[in-house]
Length: 277
Image 1 (cartoon, rainbow, N blue to C red):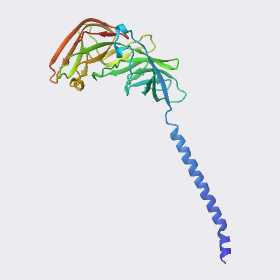
Image 2 (image 1 turned 180 degrees about the vertical axis):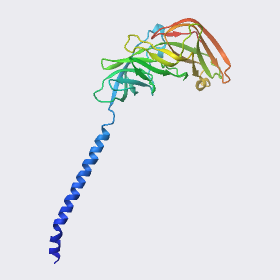
Image 3 (image 1 turned 90 degrees about the vertical axis):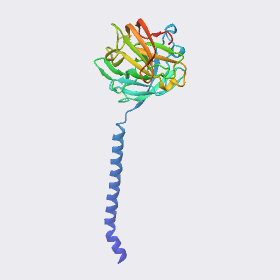
Image 4 (image 1 turned 180 degrees about the horizontal axis):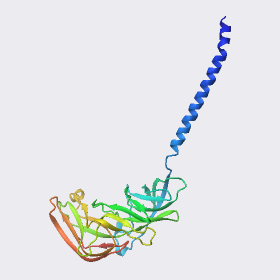
């Protein structure tokens, strides 16, 4: 009869439902395990408070108040016990407190030092840091001077690695295309290229450029039509310079104005202002 037929299949049905339940449980456990394994490969995010040393007002016109000014998009490179050249981007700059955010290799890692500006190709080996300084920049009226900072009192304390030349151009020709700064003479120095800090733990450490070019170029085209004057802060390696040629050219590389500055000394964390062009 019909009831007896159902009774005959009941054990089979119960067994089938048990198997189905076990399969579903295994599937859920398996998926959860895969999710956690994937999640464990995500590097933890952390923040760093950043300070920058001040420069004597008598030797600097940085932001007109001797204080370095960070900009949106600025990035620093951070190193830790296991973290290697991790890019940290600026998160906030309020009430004299600057915070950068980035990832570290593990939540137990502690930042050791950082540098500015960030370069993907930077290498750290045998206590030395090697990075690139490009030959061409845009004029932004802001500073991009190489800095190095160590982790002190729960913050990165940045120090300048070189000096600066402050160049002001007034009555700028509308055809101005480039501002070119060249180191010339017997005591000339490379201004751009492969930069090296020989010992990052040395107090007052500086950078020098092992190989590269003796000139740096600033693009004026984006501002020549809009501004009659501009301020340019040029990072320079520490040293004695026989002469520095400051030149403004047009699109045909013809010189519009030239000026030489002779026998100058560039010191760490100091700015030299040259006569207005």
